[in-house]
Amino acid sequence: MAVALVVIFAGFGLILFTYRASVVQSEKQLSKTAMTIGAAELAHPGLTAVIIRIARVDGAFLRGVSPQGTIRPPLPLVIPTGIATQALGSPNNPITWHQGSKVIVALDVPLGPAVVRPGVKSVLVVLIRVVKIQPKSILYLLLIAGAGIGGASIAAESISSRITRPLKELQGATRRIASGDLRYRIPLDSENYPEIADLATSVNKMAEALDRSRQLERQFLMAISHDLRTPLTSISGFSEAILDGTTDDPRAAAIVIQRESKRLESMVQDLLELSRLQARHFSLDITRVDVASVVTEVAEVFSLRAAEAGLEFEFEELPDTRMAELDPNRLTQILQNLLENAYKFSKGRVYLKASDGDDNDVVVVVGDDGPGIPESDREKVFISAHRNERIASRTAGTGVGLLIVAELANSMRLKVGFKSPIGPEGGTEMALVIPLESTE
Image (tube, rainbow, N blue to C red):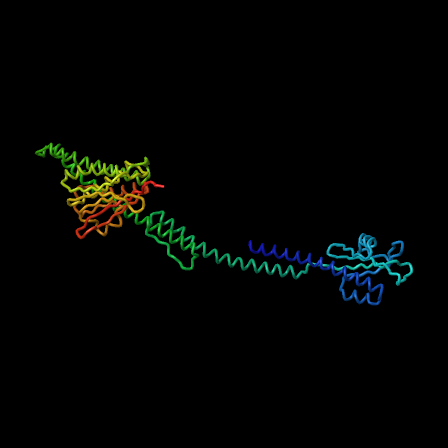
C-alpha cells in the first residue's frame, strides 16, 4: 500500500508539474503569436486569419482603440477588463492573465505613421488558450497505481511468506527448547534469507550447548552422589556399630567417623565454593602481588605434606620478584588445587616449576608421574567434575578442584591448560600463565 501511495503522489506531482509547464509554455507561445498577429495586422491584414488558424488558439479578438482609449467593438464579457486596461497602458508589451484553466494574453499595437485608420490609434490583440489536465493522464495514473498496488501486494505476500514462515518455526522451536526439549533442532532451508538461516543456526547451537550442559550436569550430580555416599556409609555403619556395641574398638571406629566427617566436610566446602564461583557470588581483592613469593609459600607448605606421604617433591622458584595485579589468596587457592590434583594421582613424584614466559608473564607448571588423563576425559577437564574410577588415586574427592581452578583463573584473567600424557608412561602437567604488570 505504501508503494502505491508513493506512486499516486508521484504521479499527481508529475501531472501538476506538466500542467504548470504547459501554462508557462502557452504564455510564451501566445505572447509571440500576439506580436506576430499585431505586426501582420499593420503590414498585411490578410495574413491575420491565417496566423490565428495556424496558432490553434481557443479564442482570438482584434479590436481598434480610439485616441480616447475606447475599444471598438467592445470585447466579449469572458475577457477581463483588467487585462485590456493593463495592455493599453503598456504598448507593445504582452500582458498575461490567468482565469481558471484559461491563459489570456493581450497586446496593444500602436499604428505607425504609414498606417492610417480613421479614429483608430492602435490595435488590441487578445488571444485565449485553454490548458487542461488530460483525463487520459489521470486514467493512466490510476492504471499505474493499480498495477503498483497489485505488484506490491504480490511481492509483499512473497516476502512475508519467506520471512513469517521461518520466524514462526523459530518461535515454535524456542518454545520447545524452553519447555525442556533440548534435542530438538530447527531444520535449515537453503531458500531462507541468510539472516534467518544464521538465526536458526544460532538457536541450534544454543540448544546443543544447553543439551551438553545438562548431560554434564547429570554426570556431575551422579559423581557427587557417589562421592558423598561413601563417607556417609562409613559414618552410618561405624556409628551404628558403636551404638549396638558390636565393635571391638570403639575408639578406632570413632577415628574413622571423624576422618570420614572431615572428608565429607571438605567435599561440601568444595561444592559450596564451586557454587559461589559459578554464580559469581564472590569477591576479589586485587592488589599488587609478588608472584614469586606466593609460589614459594605454597611450595613450602606442600613440601611438608609430600614428605609425610613419602613423595618426591621438586620445586624450581623464580630468581627474584615478579609483580602482578591479582588476588593473592585466590592465586594460592589455584596453586593448592593444582598440587592437590597432582598429589592424588602421583605414583611418587610431584614437581612445581615457575619460570618466565615469552610475553611478559610467568608460567607455573605443576606436574606428576601419574597415569595421565584418559583421552575420553581430556575435553572436560576444566568444564566438569574430573574423576576417573578406573584410575587409582591417593585420596578421594568430588573432582571439582580443577573446575574451581578454571573459574578462579577466568575471574582474574589468567590462562590455565594441561598436557597429558607427557611421556610414554603417562604423567600430567598443569600450566598457569600469569600476566605481569607492564614495565613501561
